[in-house]
Length: 307
Image (spheres, rainbow, N blue to C red):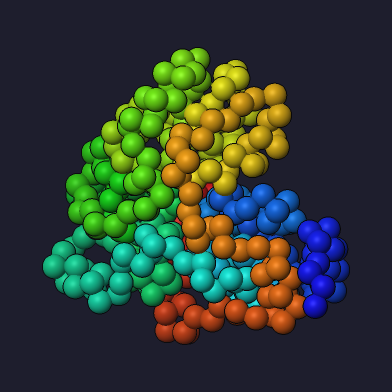
């Protein structure tokens, strides 16, 4: 069979999207070719809202498994597809339901606050979810006398704990991509470009965060890049976001903090996967009803707290 060119793939995808009343969501870390064909590109919180607002018959989520699960929870009347079933999240896999249940038994009075980078089954054991964009606001609003069990990201948790002063029990999970970013990477880039400002994602370790001019979610980085007067910006997160940053700010230079800051699973989805998934309507995300109801409640609380 003849291999389709990128332009042919895009043409077929756009035809099927219209024919099937589908919407394509893509995370900021996706390949540039995927971001460019998506209807909406954003971070977890932005895409959660888009999923909740969507009236499409099919939502095709170019991201990782937990993101597609979130879309399925918020849009039960739509068919939610994940184009590549190998696109999982290592951090989410670090928190499994038996372990979370055991921790809840150990700390029965603690509020369970879960980063959206987690499975639907873990969200079902959660009081409220957070994203990197709203975690500080939500945790700060929780009762002062309540201990918080925060999972699965210990780096984000440590940052929130320090900023809010809340008493928190941190799960021993992390993002392997952000853990590969070290303070020495920031210092090296700053030495090369002393005038550059540094923006860091809160999934990074605290010693990296301490070197930041701004600590931001990916959505926050996009806004900051537009607003800052700085002409050079060191980007301490997954390199995929630089595609959109450069596209939206052609007059500025974006410097990846490290060549190692790549999430392999975020890079697995290709145009070919997107076309095949849409054509065959394959890799539908289905969540058992008993899990879906509880998991959705924790996300709805998050969305309400974010408005």
